[in-house]
Length: 120
Image (cartoon, rainbow, N blue to C red):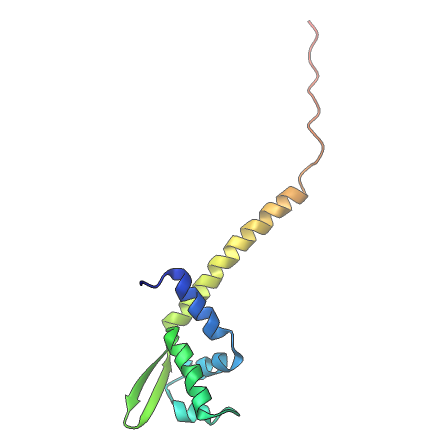
């Protein structure tokens, strides 16, 4: 089954919904880090950090490669830009809706007065 844009959005926002994953992403966007070095920054097991990295990787926000016995993770700047673009699109939709609500709220509620008719 092919992934839809909505599936991609779900995966991206799920991945970003956790503060640890957002922090991992910030770290790997600055440069490549080994998963073990990332794990040293958190008060959780190595396996838990590996799971967070896997969620980010499935969402396409990071890539991993092997170097010897280490797994190295890097952030994908283009994927982060895609999230930013999605949010900008959503913002435009909501700004349009708010503008329409404002138009309705501030519209003149009184019906137009009839124009005087000339008598013949």
